[in-house]
Length: 472
Image (cartoon, rainbow, N blue to C red; front, side, top):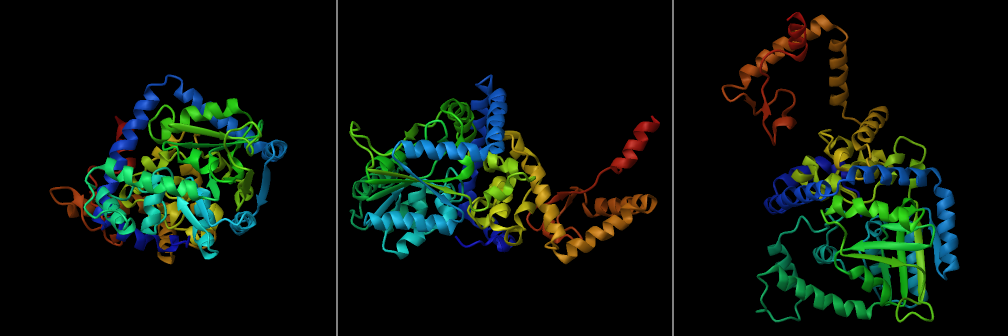
């Protein structure tokens, strides 16, 4: 997936003027937030579970090598294979080698953001292997030639009318006059198409929400059951997972599971929680003949022991996206790479480099809602500030911004001049706000008011009000 983060501002302008996108994004604002709040309020121990989940992942990250080695030994003991991939290119090559060895022509895929990070679909197609996304949202955007705009709701940016049009273009073998006015009819059509794909697939590829060191088990959480069919029907099952997905025991996993679905979709539990532990045994009625786990690093080990290690606690629930006002306004594609929203604005610079993603840490109002709702208590605003510091140190910030900061610093070091200048500026901005006290155009900062009004100053400055309060 090409990184377009350097064009973030251009992407934002396009997103803000996309009426269909803005219509679709209203569902994020209205649905996810309310459901998450209701699910959390209904569980008295929710905050304690968040603390437990955070502590479990912190323990894992402090002992990651030991748990990964334990996981590998258990997978091997159960008849499976573990492959270690330092880069996305290495992981792609491993998938291709497995597919070629079994002469695979088609591959079904359960939802996996790691496969997006690997750019797997286009890679397989180049070698004559057809990948089919089986998550409904992923299937829709595959037909559209797009990438996910949300980590748990990949097609959240698409309206039902757009889905209907895409199905008509793609499913040309079906009657043109078939009913397609209700969501149920579109779902039924996709199910019929995908059912045949499941039966034809030579290899099934899934992601993993958790890897269990205790048992060598991979776990995938879905609401559609496509994960079950993807890993049980083909001859070969490949699990794609990043290193930090490992947890010590099934009991630890169950602790984290109690905050995962509640934070993501407001459910107590997802509909399907599927555990895979090796290939089919002689007594099993179904399952794959081969079981492979590809563990991808791709820069994550470089985050250990740094100010960004906490980001590796992320369980991909999407709560930070669902509550982020910036994401609400621009959707996921504007961020320009695999991971959008607050979590992406921290993770993308770590994986792709701050040089390519310098705009993303600035795509935040620092309102703190992301940290407030994160089930793993990840301090996202603090890490965004760290990336801004690194951006400044590397001289990646625009020259005008650096000059303005130097000018502000010059005034800030001269309190008397600063207070006088502030009083004059506040008075001028108050007059410019008019009777409505709203600024539609801000001098020397037009980008701030290009897409929104700002309230004009009213009353005195904070310092003057503070001093007045002290005198009384």
